[in-house]
Image 1 (spheres, rainbow, N blue to C red):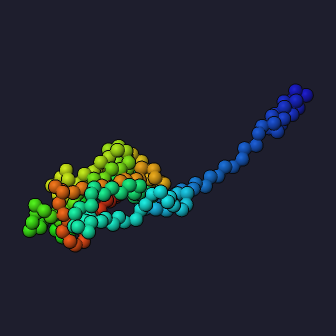
Image 2 (cartoon, rainbow, N blue to C red; image 1 turned 180 degrees about the vertical axis):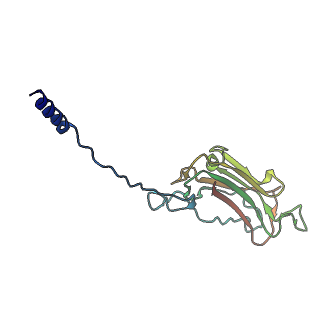
Image 3 (cartoon, helix red, strand yellow; image 1 turned 30 degrees about the vertical axis):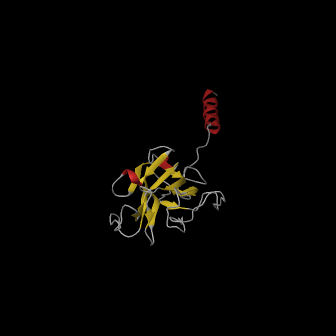
Length: 193
């Protein structure tokens, strides 16, 4: 009888033991390439009537040929710049020049073909210079000013989020501008690293 009970007990233990299931796993992988871009805001359209991304046209002279003053253009925007990885960012300003920089007009005491720019921007946070970055092309000899540095991670300037600047046109020694076309720039460059 003891043998029967031992056999029944062993069979009961087998029946009470949990059943083990087979397990399988399918891994899902993805890879996103490093990239930077302009516009295409993450939440859709990017429209703000108070900030302007259009090119700036400056009236340097009045009808008497005099410099019109220290023109200031505020509420300007680089737009929505983004990088999905750490990036090297450069903010660069080039003065307004008619012709070749350094080619002074014949009467350089009264006229100039170069007008420096002073840019104040909050986008200096991306170069490590802070939100009050001032770039002044009169500080250097080549008519440019720049700030560059690396971000610690991905970023998106968003709507007015560290993407704004104001620009002021400066007059070197109260001179009249010579006639012709002038070109200058304010540039924001981001390259994923």
